[in-house]
Length: 217
Image (cartoon, rainbow, N blue to C red; front, side):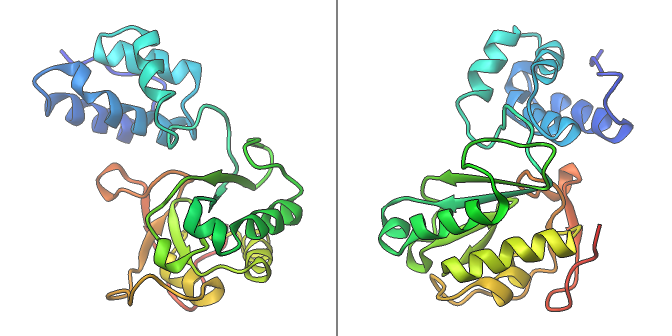
């Protein structure tokens, strides 16, 4: 019988059951369950790691060894919006440090310091695969290419003022982006609703209106 975590939402309990049932060994479901724990708690807390350990039949230390390796599993609280500025070589040469400084000064935060009580958390990250559109920035893992320091400031002001419920990469690219790696395909009207990567089957995707601004919080 599949274990459940009683303090998880019903939807996340059901997702956890389906995930575990899809693997021949429960422990193989570790990373998807860490994602669900992030969706439930907004980050992978010590309690969340103990919960995932209970579901998979392994120790909390084994869970921690995986959660601490992958940077997208946050170990501390973040705001509603996680702004990730790429500082790898292509973005660095394109002025990413200036973009990062502009973001930091706009929100009064320091990269790498999570602040759950604030709406926006900033971090610097390694390559996010948009070298041709450097400098590149993500908000809740939704991409913007060709960002300047001035556009970065405008982005922070927009997030603070409008508090969009859904983060749409096409909308942000139109408002705050510049040169792209390549011409994007059709417009995507779905995006992230939490500061974790959007993934439809796990309930972390929402719809919005590109160009008209997504609904405010």
